[in-house]
Image 1 (spheres, protein in one colour):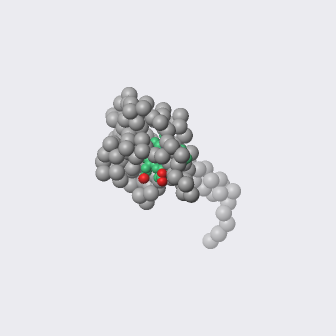
Image 2: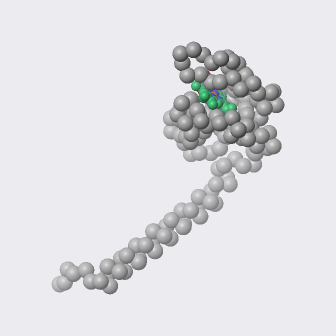
Image 3: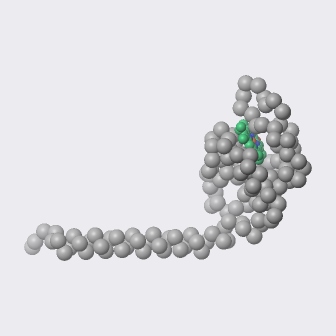
Length: 144
Ligand code: HEC
């Protein structure tokens, strides 16, 4: 009995293995693409939510915060802040509005952005929208 791996066998393993994992990769990609519409909550994207997202970007909130685990680790995760604040956009707006103008001495603090009421509402709606995305429990820890 020969234990030798011939060139043909090695080539078949190489091509067969490559093809197998390529198909697996394509299959999983397709599966993700098919599942996303029911998970990403896109039906809830109103003009107000989109406005909140623009404000989120323009003010670089992600420079301090994470959103669904993505971003900087200076300040709390905000993907779940709506639920953590008792499912209330009012509490979110109150928090952002109530930040002291000069920050809080000797500790990290959230800046005062001087948003208008419309802008505050848009940001709160954006954070509410984010909290309703089905992330299959990501991030695993409540503070991100
Ligand atoms: C310079 C860093 C920084 C930036 C930029 C920043 N934040 Fe914050 N934010 C903080 C810190 C620090 C906290 C923790 C609370 C505190 O002590 O002020 C916080 C807390 C919060 C909270 C309450 C979260 C909780 O779980 O207590 C919300 C909501 C929030 N920020 C929203 C925003 C939004 C929206 C933006 C962008 C418009 C933003 N933040 C930009 C630093 C920042």
